[in-house]
Image (cartoon, rainbow, N blue to C red):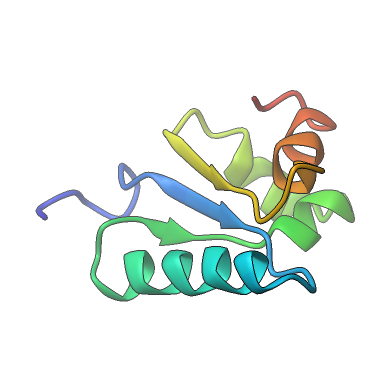
Length: 83
């Protein structure tokens, strides 16, 4: 894929305690390593780390991969007005 770093989609993944959560994280890592997306830190967004919130709010496409029906990734992104 020939996207530049600034235009690649961002991928945020759950890495919680369920087996599906671990698969979500594995998927995000593969997407990052293959150059399909840039993985960013959902915990940092939840912790309101300024630089990570700025990245989330940059307007880039976002892939939010949750590992269970609690939708923690989606809910965390919503706290910084990114959905």
